[in-house]
Image (cartoon, rainbow, N blue to C red; front, side, top):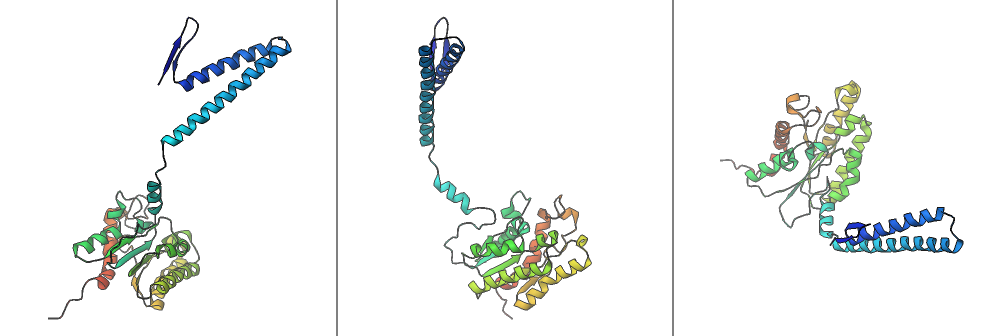
Length: 289
């Protein structure tokens, strides 16, 4: 609601709040002008009191307005809880399905970094579609987190394992290689993740996705890095995808402008690299005729 007030010397149109502020500013200017003049002490005290009271009234009024505004916009706690449960890298709320669960635990490659529709265009999303097309009863969870290292994955794994898992696809290490992290440290972190998963879910099937370090890291480093994955696979008797980015890494037309993250076409090939290994664990065995 606006207030309109005018006479020959003064005109105002605005809300009650704006009117009060205008009046107090006017009183303040007048009193400041008079304070500069040579007024008797008693009149000066009255003007100072008037100015002080004006600011008290303004503060009280603005405080009341602020409280009313806060009351008029209640916090939507449901939306807040929903956003926190869908943070990047955190799987969506667990459904009540009894279907076996496949978890992709990785970095920006699993997360579908740079894609318009990562949920469907990333290789885990493409795998989910393949599973649906084959009428297989599996729930697919994409727990990829951009920027994740093996150390970060080790710290995050307990949270991810709050839900049951039947097939665990471990796709980590790429960022370690890009940063030149000591290969023994990366290997220890990956082993720790494998141990944690096996301890909590002894019947789980673990598939390890092999990665390679960029050539500019030097021959010794790239060789040591490459050996991490087959050695861990053999030691833990788990399945191995030899190189996740086979036929994609280094191919400009299959990657985004950064030359690191696959584009849509690249993710389709990565999905095939995964499917070649995964299908043996989820497709029904064909009976001999």
